[in-house]
Image 1 (cartoon, rainbow, N blue to C red):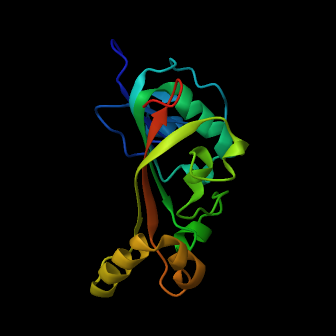
Image 2 (image 1 turned 135 degrees about the vertical axis):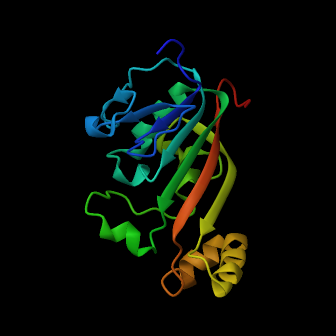
Length: 180
């Protein structure tokens, strides 16, 4: 590989992206780099990446604070961390025996200034986008609209009646005195 791509696809599995450095711990899926994502630091340059994809992977990791610290190290200032994960109300969250975490709408707030619990980690991200995604259907469109406008009420009272399918987040790296 002559030039290191500016995009990183962590836990790529069979979903390799042509514009990315594809990383997975399973050599059989032929990633560009075979690496266990629970081993830190990753053998990658600090501040190099503009975009990191972590699609259906975060729920498998051992330590979310350690991962967020490593992601911030790898991202350029303002770089984007894109995450998808089954919402905790989804049957998919509990079906896979390798899932270690069952996450809700506000989990990433622990790595922003928006949470009183953000003292668990010094890293900071800004939430660019966050949405609950539901299985397609007429009723689901209405529920998705309401749940994404009232996520705390949805998770407190309605998540088990109308389970979300997954959660999609886009976070921006905040480095060096809070500027993005």
